[in-house]
Image (cartoon, rainbow, N blue to C red; front, side):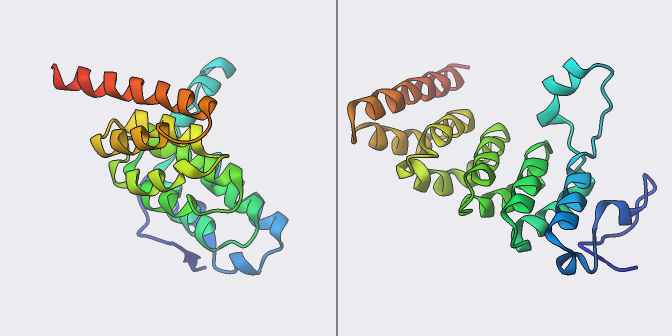
Amino acid sequence: MAHIGESEPTPAGDVASFALPADYLMLPAGERRAVVESLTERRTVRRDSLREVIAHHYEDGDPAVIGGLSIALELDPDRRVKRAAAAGLACIPDKAVIPALRGALSAKDRATKGHAIFALGRLGAREAVPDLVRLLDDSYSRTAVADALVAIEDEDALRALRRAAARGPRFRRRRLGQRVSALESALGDKGSR
């Protein structure tokens, strides 16, 4: 059976278990969501305790599912499926997820966008800085974007954060000013090494 996003089989397992079925988009939304959620639940490391599972949730995603989740995120019309795909990609500590997550920054669904913002910051995705900077005027995403830009530790991000912190209501300026200080500190610490 052919699969969307199929690649060469690997000795570690059957690639079919990592890809979307060929008729994926023809399935009802609930079944598509179940397929995507099964991919998001694949982990590279099994944890012994619930505490470890929770603590490492955003570190254990299986890179083998990137293709299937990326396709679902891009093509699926259901926002809940897109959200699940973004959440799954956010759990994979592999730079290969960056293009799909950058695409998710334009999602209308706030949770989908939030997963992408968080993961891009966690991955230090410098190539996503221009995309993230455009979201600094989005009232829902602003704080998460500022935190992601701090995590990325980029000079362009600092300039954009300074501009954003210089305008708007006082509470917004103060909140963004805190992120500016954090980023200045992080960049200063890097420069002193």
